[in-house]
Amino acid sequence: MNTFMKNSAAVMALVLGANAAAAEGELVLYHWFEYIPQELLEKFTAETGITVTMDTFDSNESMLASLKAGGIRTYDVSVPGDYMVSIMAGEGMLDTIADGELKNKGNIAPEWSDPTFDPGRKHSIPYQWGSTSFAVNRDVYSPATSKPRTSCSIRPPSCRAVSTC
Image 1 (cartoon, rainbow, N blue to C red):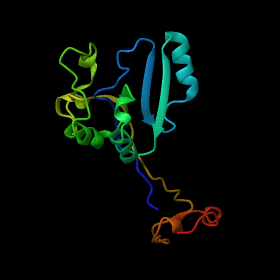
Image 2: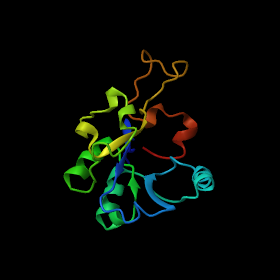
Image 3: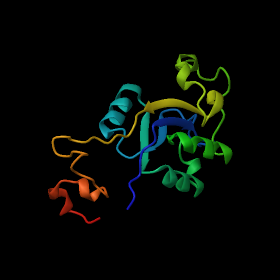
Image 4: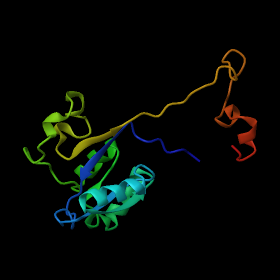
């Protein structure tokens, strides 16, 4: 089974037609699984009086399928990965951020202000950035003496017993 690799950049996108976007005291969020702990949502509610409901997804594709199946009118904010912003914008699923609508938009660093997936930041704002990496313990693995052919062959023996390749 292929492992889903998270995007190098995640962005927040405003979902077109969100029915509670202007509702006072409530925010409905659609976010990646395990990115925001429940305790933080509870703290936000305690400090602001705004109730946050969060549904989660595990891939851009599952988020898109859920929104297309009718979920788009459920959420105030959705958090797709970078490439999904251009797909959603192309399908008319994202609202446009008007000039002057976000007071702090000018604080976005220049390197994040005009991404290829959303030229001019018309549909998204930067939220998180990260990368996926792979580390090798050279005390255990040496390219000169070891030549792994699959990911299974580089796992420690204790992990090999758990699953098969």
